[in-house]
Image (cartoon, rainbow over all chains, first blue to last red; front, side):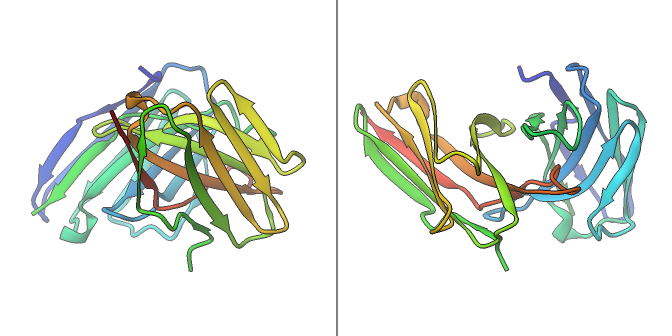
Length: 115
Length: 114
């Protein structure tokens, strides 16, 4: 148990569906992250939030829409996805950004399949 | 172009022996490095880190070595145990305003043989 939870753990959706991924951290951290991990590829940073403000948006297509209502919760809203968006989506948190120690703590991920 | 490379997709080691996992990087702006371990169906778990002001950091059975001139780091696990079988990721973070960014390698799958 890392203190970061993600729901759902598995999601299958059609290209016309709208769904949302949820992440919650119980660590009292101020920064939260969304990553994408495709098969055999490195983790790719998608979005970063610090104190509920977005600080990074790594050229992610607009069909992915993040939301951070407070420092404990992070959502990723999905709509009109493509089959190549099938991947493991990981949420992480860290105490803050700009620190000397930069460890991030990960949730278990959501395995997304787009049909 | 991958800035962090783990050139060995997999490594098999006998239980009780030393496991050495390698990682190379290209960006001289990186000043903080981390190793993570990942089991199937779980997220990555932080193992150990090292700042570029050091060349070695040790935590129990895990030691990370950093060779800045070669832009190379390695993770040593000794002695290796069956529970160490997992995928190991190397990550690097740049100095400056974007130091929250972690740039990841593709991972090395470590298999510990009994």
